[in-house]
Length: 198
Length: 97
Image 1: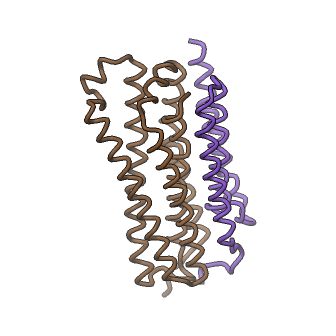
Image 2 (image 1 turned 180 degrees about the horizontal axis):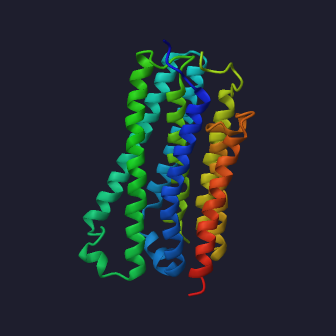
Image 3 (image 1 turned 120 degrees about the vertical axis):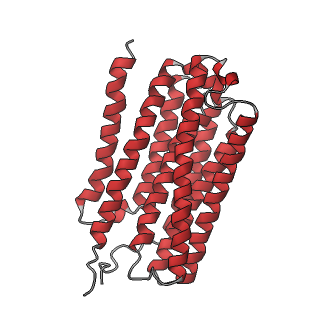
């Protein structure tokens, strides 16, 4: 007996999950908005210590990874399995570089003694402590999501190569694409809020 | 067959154009950040970010092409309204402390 497959239902399910993710980050954005309003000059000062170039680079990387993800799906639609696998691999590579950059950023801050509850950080003003708390929490949660995305991409690559994902059955690829684009959208908001405070 | 026909074949060229738009908008965001606009700065940055997200949602995430099923196109505006309410109503408190 053939298992029941529901393409539309599958996509609706994924969108519902994405909505819950938006609310998850939404709560943190709410915290951010309140504390930035309260400690605007502290936030401005602390944000100046983040590397704008790395932030911009990471934004460009993630945007490009969304393109490669979309192209991976459109290749699969056309039946080009090999091209789809290549684009999936490219998306993975870009996501990996993003996390690598994040690692260097965090390592730099840790090296300077700036991390949640560090003695150096606690000497600073309340607003700056809050900024860095939010910075680590939000970019950290986002980074975790990127990592999960990399895991998805890894399996996608294998499934594409092993023909578990085909021209007529690629809803897993599409849904993973939706997840990846959401992770990109979250970063689109994180970037100006943490790196570009004027 | 669980895939319903071929209703929406988005050209690769469209994807690339959207990507170019996103890159340019990122450039605009960074440039605007260099100017001293005070309070307006964050509004501009958020508006651009919203527009970029709109592009990703409509084209990369296919919302523009999801015909027929209204639920897809209502979910996202719905959640945005909820978030704006969360943050907006909180500010009715926070802004007056």
